[in-house]
Length: 262
Image 1 (cartoon, rainbow, N blue to C red):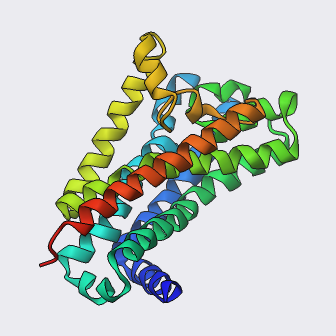
Image 2: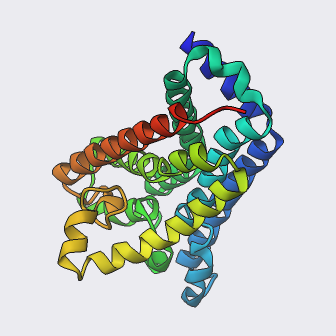
């Protein structure tokens, strides 16, 4: 029965005009990000414009569109009353289904950034002049792979980073279960993403905050587990992210279990 619920939810997401637009915009942003970074590496774009290009990178796009995706996934279920059709599965399975669909859609959104990174590595392009556009492991792997990479470690870094993103975005699920409004979830996700980025920088100089942050997927070290990171750091990042996703899933279940569906 769980499979039917998952397929039905995925079909609803695929048929959603909003989700399709978000996916197209994400893919377009990824293509522009790599094309402009490549042109900068060739000297066709001045390095002073690197900051503008980073706005097309995964960090900004995924936090904005990922939160919007959670709002569309869970919030719209309550707003459109489609949640009634899922209640026969039980509230626990509904929450697990939300997580599975969220993870699947997150993988779809991250696919162009992953493919672009792999293509640049395979082409052997010299991207050192575009180092200013590096805001995540996707461009970081392109810059680091020739010196410290192996195929197995490269693949593991992409898997680890995907799990980190899943852990980061999962914080939006309890919010969706509490407020049940698409707009609120989206606004929370985007503002929370910016806040955690600032706190992650602060955590590097504040000892207590740093110790707390290292057990969340928002820690600066965990969020930078590229091919140049150690296997131990990658495994730590994956474990922390999976645990954090589990905590957020459990909180979302508790909020949903005690709530009335009207």
